[in-house]
Length: 372
Ligand SMILES: [Fe+2]
Image (tube, rainbow, N blue to C red; front, side, top):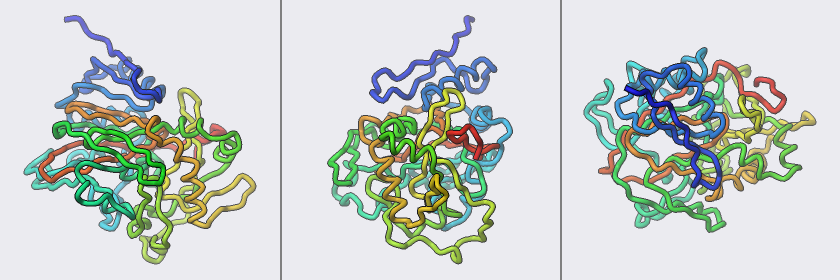
């Protein structure tokens, strides 16, 4: 039987020119040559969609994801998902025999990979945004839930790569995604899409002055950020939080080790292309450390600054909204894109996905080529 070679097909239709599809891959039996093709595609196109992978085991998903960083092993959020107060806690369920792989989705399942009688709930913006779309429009309209990087941002390094696999996808209705931020921008999206934007595109859209600012500034993240932000609410475009002083005080958080606080460059360098990506998790930021050594610590001011820098890059023409098909296995450069959950499901619309990433074995690469 003739062996078909992996083929990489860049998304030509997508105006933003990122993303690619890979066909003829067999994830359960990848050779080193196959992996080299996939790795090249990932760092060139940021998001790669490997088609027809229904049946791939959690172990094979873990092994492929880990191949990008063989010295990594523990899940990107470590065990912090167990913290009931974390905003991430309700959304992810850990596969008992493969703890780096999480199950996400919508609906009730009697059994899946050793998880019994689980009810998955697709995150709804109503719980997280300060203002919500009215109930009567809820099934027709949706928003970006939360733009983010998959990362603990405390104690652990941001994962290099995340994989997402579609096991069950409800049949294809579409929704109008509204920004509701005064711009009037909206886009037509498939139900339950995952939205991606390129950090390099966000960087390239900046003025020369802002490029200099983001190349020379670092972001300090809140310790235990997903617990810290839990009482606070998000902007309606999902790009950061509204400043109302609701974040938890240090005394209300688990113990903080100063050495575990993350102060990361705003721009991260692609290890293959050398291109810079503006990579900031806008909901978890606490301060900006400027080139001259001063620290911008007024949280409202910090958030406004970061929102101004990132917002142009999430306009509809720059968003890749993946139209999920069962068997799609998506890998994305978590250090080169930000992404968001999207969609408002009815309880009957069943969806089952698997997500995997590992805290990186090394820091992120700054514009100076050093690891942070
Ligand atoms: Fe994510």
